Image (cartoon, rainbow, N blue to C red; front, side, top):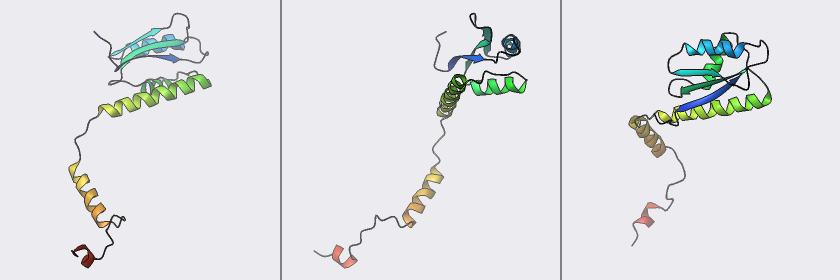
Length: 132
């Protein structure tokens, strides 16, 4: 299967204490559908998760883990990395939702625009417009 832009591979970095958080989180996330979790080989406190952004988000996963009592690494680098990932995934999810144009709201906007004085009026007197 060819990976798409919807397939995400992310790293969740946990605080150093308690030491076995990544392993416990892997066991917890392995129970979910459409997600794969594994420990990073060279860093025992980092969990690598693979998921589709249509099913999960990094923000949702991390919030769920924090709700279960896990402690994430809150260094400045990790906070910035998290914020960027959250933003990108939220924008991507919002862009996937394609709504039909709301014709009624467009009509209301057009009517309000017609009635609102907005400076696009020709101030030439009516009798001069008809002059030939």
